[in-house]
Image 1 (cartoon, helix red, strand yellow):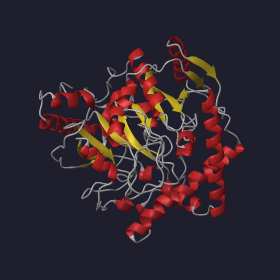
Image 2 (tube, one colour; image 1 turned 90 degrees about the vertical axis):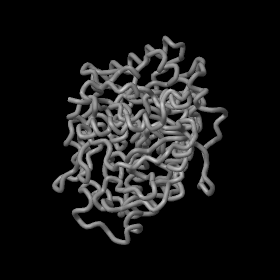
Image 3 (cartoon, one colour; image 1 turned 180 degrees about the vertical axis):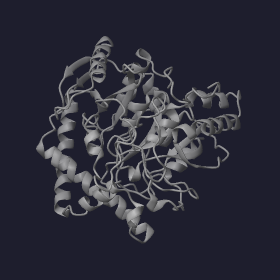
Image 4 (cartoon, one colour; image 1 turned 45 degrees about the vertical axis):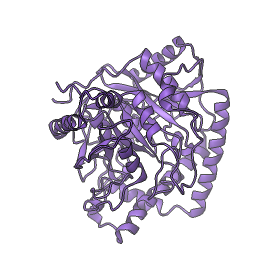
Length: 470
C-alpha cells in the first residue's frame, strides 16, 4: 500500500491535522479508500457509517471504527453478529460513542463480531468470517476480530473493542496489536448497561501503538452519572505514563498452563525471550502464578459465564418483544441459552461470592508483585471454519479452543483487574505472538509504563502483514 497515512498511528495522524499539514477530510477519504480496497479480502467492516464532521479533541479527524457489539450509535444498524437482530437499528447513542465523537474521532463503520461475542473467533453466520490480515485462511480470534483486522491491515489506526473474557487481548495477540482491557468501570457502559453482565465486560480499543491506547483512554475514561460503581481515579494522564520509566518491577511469570496443555514451541520460546528481555531491562522476574486456581475457581468461572450468557439473549428477547426463531440464532448460542437458563439463582449468587474471594486473593498477590506475565495465547491462529458450532455438535469449537486458550485470560474479567496483550514477538511463520500482563486493580499506570518500555526495547510498529492484499 502506498497511502502515506496507512501506517501512521492515531496520534501521528492527529498531529498532522493539528499542525494543518492535512485536513480531516484527507484522512477520512484515505481511510475510506483503504476500506474499499481491503475489506473485500478481510470482511472486517460490516456496516458503513456516513462520517460526520469532526469535533475538536485530541484525535480530531482521525478515522475510527467500532465493534458491532454493546456500543450503539443512533440511526445505525446494530446486530451483535446475530440474524435475530439483522434489521435492528439503534435509537440512541451510548455514552462511549458520544465520548469518541467529543475526542474528535470520525467513525466510519461497525466491525464484525461473533454472535453476541460468545466465542474467541469472528465467524458469524450473519456476515461470514473475518480473515486475519497476517494469514487470510486463519482466525483473528475474537470477539473483537473485525476491529483487529481493520487496524492490523491499515484501514484505520485504532478501533473500538470490548472484552468479556479476552475479546480485546486475544485478537490483539493474533493480529500483532496492542490491546488493553481497562479496570472495571474505567470506561462507562451506559446509558443502556450497568454491569454487562455481572461486571465481566469492559470497553476499550485495539491500537498499533501504546501511546494511542493511553491517549484514547484519557479521552473517554471516567464515570457516567448513575454508574453502579467507578474505578479508582487515575493520578495523571495515562499518556504521560507511557513515557515514564517503570523502575524495577517485581514480575511474576507463568509459562506452563495449569491444565497441562502443550504450548506451541514458538510460543514457549517467546515466553523465555520475554523473561530474558524483562531481566535485561532490570526487572526482578520470578516464575510463579497467583494462588487462586483450584476446583472452586473453575466451578465459579463456569457458573458465572454460563449464567451470564442467557442474560444477553434474555435482554434482546425483552427488547425485541419475542423469542428468536430457530434459524435466527446459531447452534452454539442456543446451547448456551439452554444451559444457562437452567442455572439456579442460588448457584449464580454463590459463584459471585466465590469470585469475590478470588478477587481478594489476587489483591494479596499484588502486594508481592507488580505484574503477572504469561503468553496471551498458547498457540498460533487456527484455520477458519473449525470454531463455529453445528447443529450436530453445537460446542464443536471447544476442542480447538484448547489449542490456544491456556493461560486463564478470563481472570482479569472476573476480578476487574486491568490487563494487556503486547505484540512482542513473531513465530517461525512470521505471525504475531502476544504476551499478557495483568496488574493490580486500578493500576493501568504500571501497565502503560512497562508497555512503553517494551515498545522501545522491542519495537513492533514496523511489522506489517504481508498477506493483506493476497
